[in-house]
Image 1 (cartoon, rainbow, N blue to C red):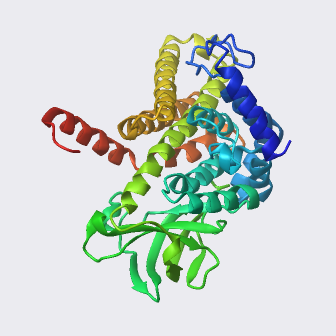
Image 2 (image 1 turned 180 degrees about the horizontal axis):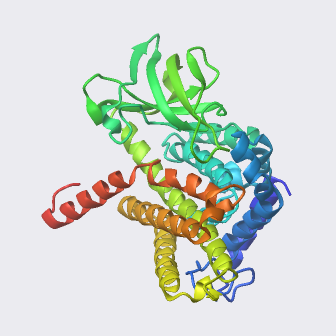
Amino acid sequence: MNISERAAVAAESEERAHEEPANGATRGIRPTREVVWQPQLNAAEAHWRDLAAELSATYFAPLAAEIDASQRYPLETVQRLRDSGIASMVLPARHGGGGASLVAYCAVVEEIAQTCASTSGIVATIQLGAAPLLLLRDEALKSELLRGLIERGEAISFALSERHAGSDPASMQTLATPEDGGWRIRGEKCWIGGGGAAHWYVVFAQTQAGAGKHGIAAFLVDAKAPGVDDSQLEDKMGMRGTRTATIELDTWVAQARMLAPPGDGLRMAFGSLDVGRIGVAAQACGMALAAFRLAVEYAAKRRTFGQLLIDHQALGFNLADLAARLSAARALTYEAARAHDNGLDVSVLAAQAKLIASETSHDVIDAALQIFGGAGYVKPNPVERLYRDQRVTEIYEGTSEIQRLLIARAIRAQATGESA
């Protein structure tokens, strides 16, 4: 089924969703018998989730260990994501995308992350790269760029972070200066997801030294343009099937490729990151779900001191705590996604979801490894890979410390009546 056919099926499901209850009785929606909280999905959302589950079982899971071991970027997986419509699922239907909700996107990312975290990372990178385009006010430019992404598979990567300006992007050193009716961009961007595989980069740059956030603009940079070097790839601890690169820039960009003028660049970046953080929360929940289920299955079979591991009260209480925390993390993540779909400002809710989901995921996977003992510390146990893959969810798209800072500022603003 091609992208347009997938979009048509999703649109038909969306229409039915308005007539069908989202209470677990809707066809295709899983019953809520599991101890860990399950999201209530409408027909369209369940369609996307089930598609992701099918692709994961058939294609992504069998490749997971191999691409991790070889640190290979799986081009065949990227093509399947495009052909299935998942790569463009959240893009507007009027531009040829799937028109899916953020809830549906979270269900897809969570589902894929349970079998191959690297593939879920590829999905998230594609979405984050496209997010700034959705914020464009120029509809003609938006349509042109989205069509390139959807119809020609032109991957876009989000280039914000710098080696000394990761958590504080307002202090970035990449500089854009006027030149020949356009802009000369000079600088370095680090830890760029999809780097080396992208066709375009959304590059955020300072237009006036010392101007801070007021001088930052956003530009669309051709990855193949003279003066763009994205060949330096990182050798990562986890998510080894994704590409992460340093981007060296000394290139000219036309004025027409300025996506956000000076002063609006960080606004575009933060608006994109709000959605990205909810996706990272879903990714973290997916990895935690996989580890939790593996640990429970193992504890229900492994015997020590004459009884099953799961019958030891200390372990049972630990699993109970983890199930409750994972339920809370999932519920908060989907609530943030639903709020975004309803047009609400989710900057604080997204920070809360990412913080809680990523740190809960850390604890769940750590506990799962401990339950397996030595068997969980070595390959090919999936928990070993999950332990490495999960760690970055507490770092990228804003560290846990940054999420706490954003939430603390919001609390202060509410208490004092001052702007955050």
